Amino acid sequence: MKNKSEIKPFFYDITLRDGNQALKKPWNTGQKEVIFKELVKLGVQAIEVGFSGSSDMDFEACQHLASVSPDNTVIAGLARAMEKDIVKVADALKPAAKPRVHIFIAMSPFNMKYVLKKDPADVRKTAVDAIKCAKDLIGEKGEVQFSVEHFGDCSQNLDFVIESLQECVKAGATIINLPNTVERYRPLAFARMVETVKNALPRDIMVSVHNHNDLGMATATTVESFFAGAEQLECSLNGLGERAGNTNLYEVAVALHNCGVEVPLNLSQIYETAILTAEMANISIYEKAPLIGEDVLAHRSGIHQDGALKTQKMKKGAYRPIHPSLIGRDDAEKYGFTSQSGKTALYEIIKAKGYPITVEETLRLVPIAKEQAEKFGELPVEAIEDIYLKEIFEVDGPFKFTSFKKLDNGEKDKFNLKFSRKDREYDLTEEGEGPIEACIKALNSAGFRQKLVHYEQSAFGEETKGARADAMTVIQFETEDGKVITCRGKDPSTQKANVKAIFNGLNLIHTE
Ligand code: KIV
Ligand code: ZN
Image (cartoon, rainbow, N blue to C red; front, side):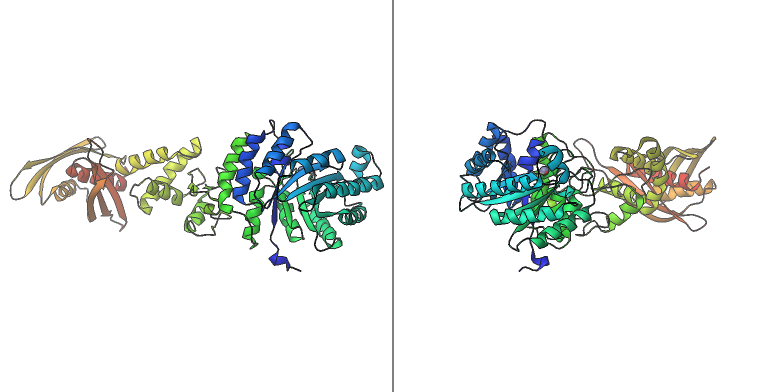
């Protein structure tokens, strides 16, 4: 007897049956084969290929898929508990190495009374007879699975269900599936019922669950049922299935993986499969769909952005359940800037665009970006770029630079600087070792004292055909109260880049 922690889940995929029967345009053989191949790549242990009794098209599809199926995969077909359906499944699945007939009948008091309109004893007999018939038809290499349709509604007659299942096992069923055909109650209450059934059946019988998602808890129900003893988990790609769908295979697989369970699937295949399935089903993926939704790697609040960035490269993230690469997603986490976001996101977005920026400069941009985001919502990267270029390189303020010229080539360079401050015009000429010194001296002589503590110049932007990169000057001034202000200027002329940086600094220091 295996210890619980050693039990591997057995993934039984129902996309091609439950998923397909709920499509507005069910798939033909070729379309089913596309999904089938994807399931094989994903490595599921069993594939329910269809309901061969439902139409000739589905019979052919089941037959074809059985003929191309790998030897190590169980190929199952659904049948009502009636001979004509069972015959169709057995016929269609003949080419498969591991065929399985899946028979179902409802055993909930409500369904037996109002839908089947049969006595419980009749229902039990129908089930047992059907299993015996399937056992005969499917032969040595095959097996029989029996499902108690509406098991989730059987809490009142669980004893009857268990006794019936014991009969079903005696008749030859080796897999007992317990569907939550319509999700109405609690995941844990369902899981407890699963545990009760599991304990009442012989140990070698595989217990399975098949949970619908009417209340959005199918993943929880399936995961908890696994820990309650269900080994086979019936799931579908993208959660396709009747009404709100079936249990989403990816969510269950990842949840179990995160719980330390050995999941026998190629998890890195998940994302590709999800995109292809959405296309094939013509049902787009909701942007907030767990794991696979377009928006689920986006962080917008300042606190989340900070935590996400600090753990970005780690397997476990502060604000994500897995590293996206686990499921084959190669898009990185995204940091959108909204009125709820903070400096971290702004800094990262600007850096990611390849622009230089300091934290102090970012802090200056935050209120401006927030004001815009309050009006327009999440700012596109281009809008952030515009804010950056404007607020860093064209700082608005009382100083307006007009011109700066070198006057002669004496021992010391002479420069003429023209600018205005509010309504007053200045026209100053100064000498200096270079343009920076002359410009600062000119400003000092007009009473605008600046203490230069850092200077550097580098290229800004990329050289393109026919256009040189701008020169960028970075200057730091220390203000009278000891604060260090970083300011930048850029221009094709190195000299003008210097002066622009100085005037940007003046406008930052003297705001009026
Ligand atoms: O939801 C359900 O009960 C089913 C059964 C046929 C297994 O799909
Ligand atoms: Zn179902």
